[in-house]
Image (cartoon, rainbow, N blue to C red):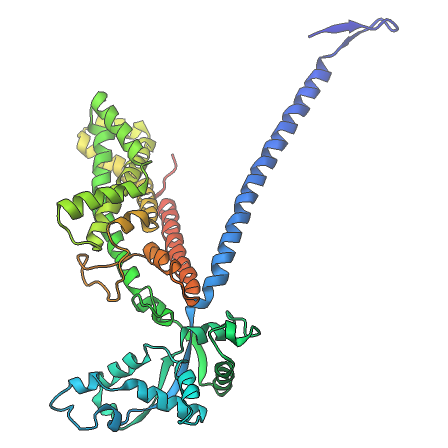
Length: 440
């Protein structure tokens, strides 16, 4: 501290208060700047998150609705079974000309001239190409429909669906769009009469993959993802927890365990595509497991998730106060009893949280699944984990590569479903932590 003598008054004046005030102001200014930087960083991240979610939701929310057309289908015996052979040869019901039934229903509904082939062709094109299969399945399941007229709700073609949802600019010249002016007029006519309407798209969650956007769904991907998560949970959780307990509570501290710990930390940072290459080499080429099977995908994701679960579990075990261990041992408990009766239950919130976060991470992985063949076109739901399947992130990847306009909303819709799964899993991790957490 430096003092000076005033030549006028002859008093001693100290400069320490001024320096102290300057130091306080400087620290407060630095604190304000740091808080401003933190708020700016958080705001920056939230803005980009909002942009991402807005982009995905604005493009994908329409995928949860589907345009449908209700037609009076006359299941004419002349068309389906003209020779009345269905009693002796049920295959005639499968081979019948069901597109004719749809054509006749559109002619009747729109009051078209049956001799005008262009009009009939354009009108029939408004119905999904998968509608004849729907009629065939109805007749095969209930042959008594033959000879009756039944109102049947059929999916509209993808282009009509896009136009009805406002995704096609109808002001553009009809030469530059896939829906012509006649079809637009018929679409408005059918909508005014209530024949054409929007309904909840249950097919998005039930149907398998399809080359027709209006019929494509996430059913196979949802079942495949469920199999993947079950396999990862059954394998990764017990193996990861057992390895963590041994390394943290029982393993001697030497160079070997230090090497194992370093390798576990390194494995957590290995790119996921490396695990895909490992699965391709070991599980498919060496072990001979079937390609595209959920079992192989689950094994690959288990290897990828294990380091995350081990690291989280060891951190949860370390968080248990040493006094708990000392008290248990002091009262005569064995080391095994101390671990499983006292330490492990108290560490369970952290273990469950790390496991769910690891599962959520595995659910969003695409690269390793591509390498083991789960990118295959699969239309039928897998009955077992050994059957060909796909997963939600892989389905998103496949739809994103399609050229059809309607697959754009399907892609965003699938992303929304995937995000909802991830949000639910992370929310579950928060609830488990709050439910089991104990404060010391």
